[in-house]
Length: 424
Image (tube, rainbow, N blue to C red; front, side, top):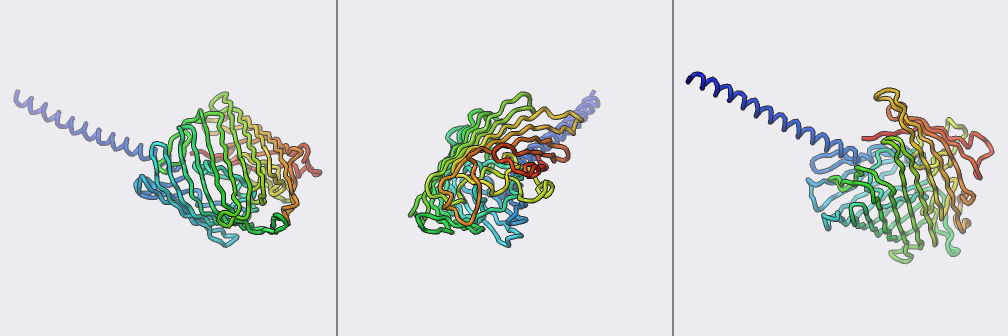
């Protein structure tokens, strides 16, 4: 009996030891899985995480017609560094213009519940002429920006800014900025203001931006970037900008209002129709640098194959760069995504039908010297299609320009490009 008890006790000890080992292994696997998930989530947000600094992947490699290859490093401190303070910055070099560009900044959290941050920054970089970015967009990561490849019209800017980020609710983000900028076009351009020629612009601007997504679900990353985990529609973005003359040596005075809305009608998980409306209006003394270009994405070259490049996401593929500028404009884009072709488990290309329309105008065109361009008062139209995910995320795009701005040579109205779609 005694021997049997000893034997049973011995078996129980072995079983308990094995159970503890199995439990430890299970916990380790679970922890490794969580770490892997968090790592992939950070990569999806555009960052490579390290102990105290998360490297910003957006600055590793880019290309445009002015800088050529643009490469460098950027990053932002994470919560291991501090939950109340952060530092951020980047340093890049353009191999075609042979210049360094950089930004350095930091911020401190005023309120954690509303994710309120006060940020300071100093930036010496380039910006595309005619572009109009929303302040809140920089808090959303875009892995690949194909339209950047073809841009050639930039202006240099040195900007000192103070911004206030605030989340009014789960669905309403706000950002307010006051900035002082020195603007120098990289191209020959002059602006005529009250019989005075300006080729350098000093701006003191105040901006207020609102991003409202009433039906979406979000989560905030460690670096306070917004990750949309469930899209809901419609979405609205509104931004107001005012440039004050004679404030900190400012020599320009204007007001600018930008608006964007996106609506999506879902049929199945991967089949849907999406409509995007963008509008903008400027009043006052506004140089070309701060007007609108309507998102062109076609290079001015002779043949279709010479113009072969990467199609953008919301750009006009047949509209040539620097062809149109406006001080008031509106664009409408309609995309219909068909259910992917189920050729195999991993190979599922998708057909997308696209139509785009733009209308705009400009007053006082004669104020813009040493540059020629058209306006959009007659309405610009293009339609086409994409076949995405044909091979390793690459696909093909075709678009045709028609209507009031149809060109005499048929091939000049055609844009044939490849697409690139990747998700992490």
